[in-house]
Image (cartoon, rainbow, N blue to C red; front, side, top):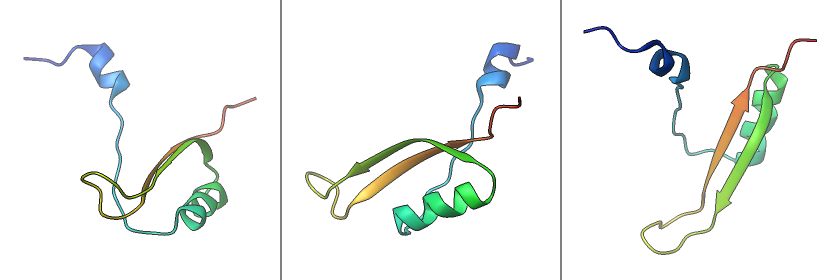
Amino acid sequence: MAEPSFLTAARESYDTVAADYDRTAGLLEQAGLVVAARLEQEPGGRANRPHACLLARKPERA
């Protein structure tokens, strides 16, 4: 059965790494991407170390 086109268009990819958040954001920008969102969370609850999520995208074309 074919997947609906709206699901195909909305599919994104992500990866998880243990790295310095500022360095990772800098590398994304050096690669030509725009860091659109950044969420940092300190340890607590089930998390035993700080973690962050970075959302990067290709820049808009002029």
